[in-house]
Amino acid sequence: MSVLARLISLTAAMALLLLCFAGTSHSGRIVGGGQVFAVTPADGCAATPISFGQTINGTLSTSDCPLDDGSFYDVYSFGATAGTQVSVLMQASFDTFLVLNNPDGSFLALDDDGGGGTNSRIPPGSGLLTLPTTGTYTIWANSFDPGVTGAYSLTLNGSVPVPRTLTVASLNPNSGVSITVTPNDNNGANNGTTQFTRTYNQNVTVTLTAPGSVAGGNVFQEWRRDGSSFASTVTTSVTMNADHTMTAVYGPPITHTLTITSLNPTSGVSVTVSPNDNSGFGNGTTQFTRTYNHNTQVTLNANGNIDPLEYYAFAAAVPVHLTHMTVE
Image (cartoon, rainbow, N blue to C red; front, side, top):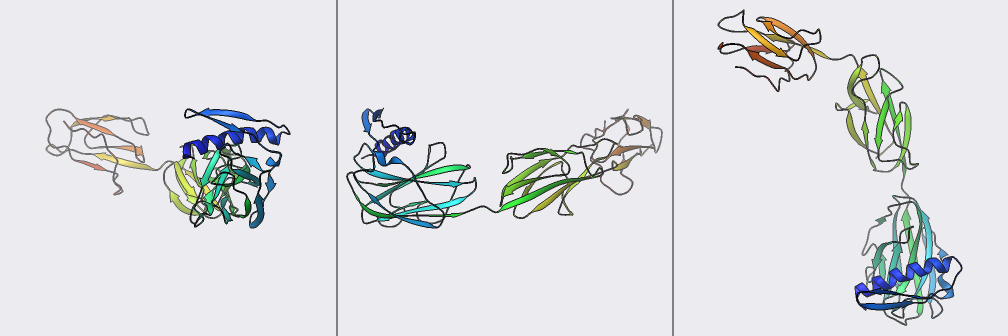
């Protein structure tokens, strides 16, 4: 049987299995790839619960759920939260085949011989598969070849994610700051107003965005993680490898002095300045000063053919960010 045919067969079986769960008995057909596949679920379609760390000894028989290729399968179910890591192993003397389905019934993973020899394992070989959503997952224990019956063992192992608490706080002010949070936490919560908490699974990366300024005139200074400086931008990301407290720190604007001078002549040169500084002053005649907030971009134009224009920025030896300075 081709891989396409098996996938079509499994898809049909899933649709009819849902009817079987509802207490009805139906048969049907699905057309795909130029072929018609018939599926007639038997009375044994009900799912058997399986727990993490449990091994169930089962038997494929002619009374189990059939696929159109003539093979039989048993259904198992387990509940899990998003981020849970699992492995499923099916062992038998015959060639096994495993299917793991999402809570919405779509296929999450398939395997034939990933468990060594003709045994099946999800994921193949080793390691764990991370489940994408919270809900009830189903496992189909199947044979690769048609008409096969016999004993098998099915083992489900899993690692439940460790919940981590993110506390989002603010300083100056200590409350009332609206913070944007992505993604949603384990309870579906996201944005909030300081102080608040969100719960995430281990190692989830969370992005936080704070406003640039708050009531009272204070401006954003930095993010602190667990009391230590972490980021100077309003948007930052933190990996939840432990419980963390992220604090948005605000304070009065940081200002710097821009001193504008000229050489040959040393004074009397008219210079246009844009934008106006914090006191509303713009253009001036050398030598003069203007005061700006940190990281303000300032454009200067010296009138006439005075060359060169020598400028000193931020008299406190702090480099000015004059990314648009123009000298003519």
